[in-house]
Length: 160
Figure (cartoon, rainbow, N blue to C red):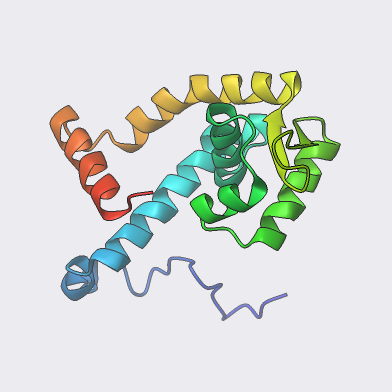
């Protein structure tokens, strides 16, 4: 338990409202602003996709496997910037829950391929239906042209 006088990190206080802080230097820092946007999008994601039990990471994993059946775990880890041991832990959970299956590659018996099961395909289809309303809500402050520009710029900065 925290003592009555202490404030939890990240908790707003009434003694120092955020509007009185000078944040101009940080607002001119792309990395900081991208991080704040990421946090906002993740908060919205957890809210929108909570009923399905999807996280941003598992959503991305499902989408990549759906769109690239047979993708090897190493490629998936590299693409999503996940450490392979962390990805393997997630894949183990998804496999034991019946959402994905791993099989040996017919071309290279040493390689593992990832596929969605019907249960996994159904889950990501449900998630895909939530994606457009979620994106609309999160991007509402921008016009459609600005939304397209934002995606174009982000894709230019982070090509796969």
